[in-house]
Image (tube, rainbow, N blue to C red; front, side, top):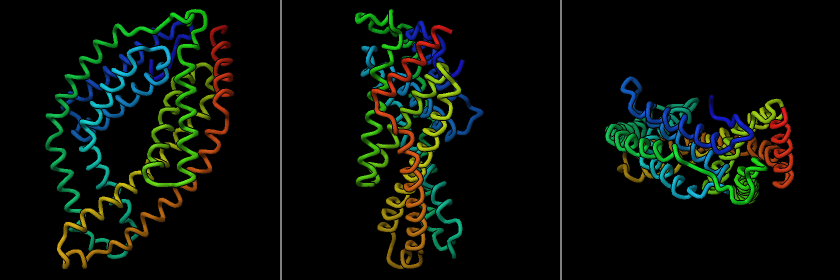
Length: 303
């Protein structure tokens, strides 16, 4: 059925069903020998993030949220070094486009490529361990239940209200902090909050697709801008680390300043676009967003 909620009268069944679909797909991708290892790592991490987004939406009514969220967070982290090494090489290639004498950075790229290949050599073992944990998570998800002690059965939207509001509020706060002081750490934190809000809009979109699809697409675009900025920030730091490890003669033959300027120019543009779009994505007050979505949910139930 896809990554969305389908039954406005039974959010508990939707929670179990949506989680099961993502975990099943993650397990299939983790063990698919026809997929390249790097691709499998990327897909498993993506599925884990989608289930964590689902859990965050239900966190106010799901007592096992903390344990299940940590399980999937740790699983994704066990694969992060492989994904990061892969992305660094791709981002470096993008940064070198249009730089005169880019070949002079060949030694640095070779070092990053070697680290990528070293990380990929561990992928099979890490994916095998990930598959074991995914099977456990899938079995647990079969019996997930929501806390109905506060009357959620009469108001199904209550099951997602707190998670929706908390995530959105934290996104607004992270945006304000990143705009006030755009450090890589603050921008990355904003990106994470945007991604979770995007997941929530995807899950809730069936309540009124015509209204929520544009918001979902805007949040997706914002997350992509901040993701690209993060990749360039990580690359800049990695270049510095690699250059520090080189001898003086090899380092002198490089063109780090030209590449740094290229990276910095990219980041200035990405951040400017993110600020403009972010102020639109997070324009509403959290309470107003919740009231609007509750109205959509109510109409969805009545349809």
